Image (cartoon, rainbow, N blue to C red; front, side):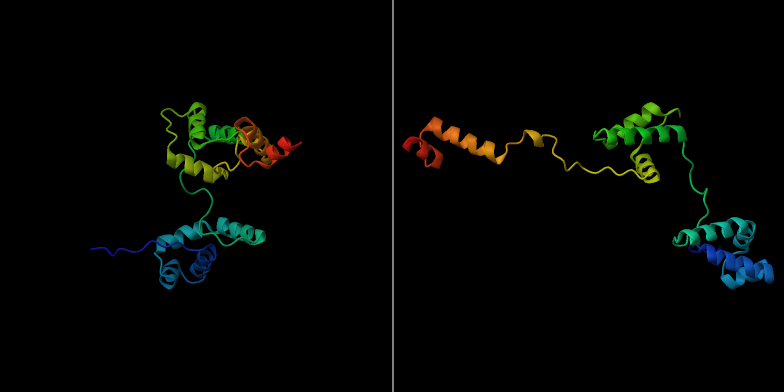
Length: 178
């Protein structure tokens, strides 16, 4: 029966420390000392230059330390479509048109060159995260310019009072007295 281990993620500095020990002592000794399997040490040794470059880059930018190298994870299916879609969203936004999630999914299906591409909700979430797109409910009322102003409401109540006779409206009373 094999022992089930909990998955762990290690910081870049931790990996580089393990690589240093592996170079001084041995890979198996470093694996024992850092309580990881020797395969991890071999992987980290082969990635040493990339890890060092990434660590320098992260520290130069003042960012918190990452745990993974670039290039991991699932690749985009259609980079050109995603870039064109992003440009369309930016254009629509600059023209003050509201873009909904459904509109983005429909446009993605039209632009995609991948056969049987399904612009699923999960794809949309990942696309928006990759591109930094945030869609919020519109707080701007599109009919705000047509809503009655306080002056217009006052005029309306005056006209209504005139049409129905005096019902305690002060302007009608003043009008009748003049």
